[in-house]
Amino acid sequence: QVQLVESGGALVQSRGALRLSCATSGSIRNSDTMGWYRQAPGKQRELVATIRSGAIITYADSVKGRFTISRDDAKNTLYLQMNSLKLEDTAVYYCNVKGFRIGILTNYWGQGTQVTVSS
Image (cartoon, rainbow, N blue to C red; front, side, top):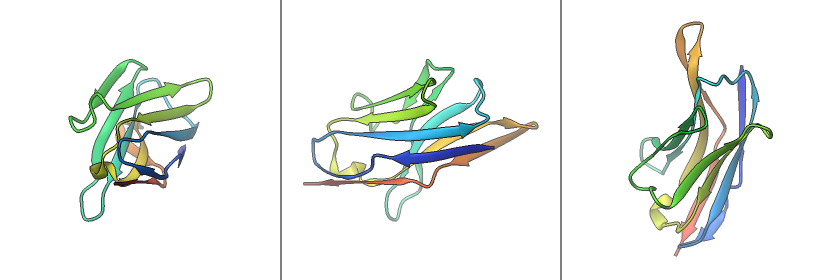
């Protein structure tokens, strides 16, 4: 099992910065993909950024150049540094771990943390 607990969400002004953290525990494997997703009101959950094997990183086009995903294995923590925040970044942000368990692709989710960007 994998447990994920997000923190760091807040109310921040446009063009501000925020860092989200995701404390992880349980059996996370090197082959797992870790990532951040977000869901704005009335919209579907969307991918923000993922990291695998510590170096394979992807970003949504909407956050490229502004957000940085990283992980600290010594602290069992996944981060999302968000700079130059925009109003449209307002959403609940979820931490995710995806990997195969007993041959089945399995997703683990945190409870989410609210990020609100104001003008």
